Image 1: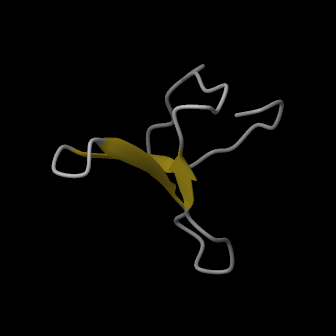
Image 2: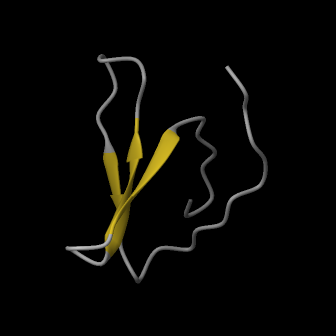
Length: 47
């Protein structure tokens, strides 16, 4: 996103009409994806 790479869980919120990247490690903050962000899903990690 915006030139950076992340491995996070993506959550779609239909009520708020947005999505967030959720960190599985509590030391890292979640990221809300805004319409102005350059965002794409490149791959999938299976745990």
